[in-house]
Length: 199
Image (cartoon, rainbow, N blue to C red):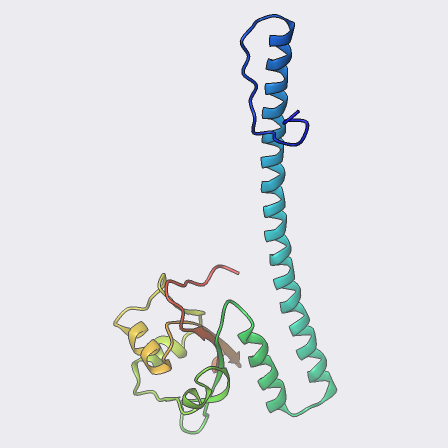
């Protein structure tokens, strides 16, 4: 009666080896199989939920790209497009901040162009000149810059960079024009024990 009511955690105590005992053994095997199947279904359900979350993230990224693309074709000011692109970037990877550094062609240093999120006022004041270590060793590189608890640069650059930007984790991507870095798009946060995953 308990098993019929849904309590599949029960095991029947089999005391005899006649037909009733065999029936008890069969019921125990059935409830064990049902428990196993329910555990498998629960695992599949959790995996499906995770896959759905990942799909939703990718859809969000693609819809953001489509929105920026349609804005570009609509003809608004370049600054508006940059602002929206930076805002959309902040929605990625638990970011509290997104920023865009532009390289000044005449003075040869990086200056903050757009910031979205916490510490915006402070971050807008940041300038990085060729005298700074992080200029060539961090921002002027041809590769993705990952600064978090798992990844670090040599020569204390991580410490210098994170101190200058007042964040704990940062992911920065150089933007190229005619084979040289013209801007750096970054996302960052102040979370402890955080690392950026491959996506």
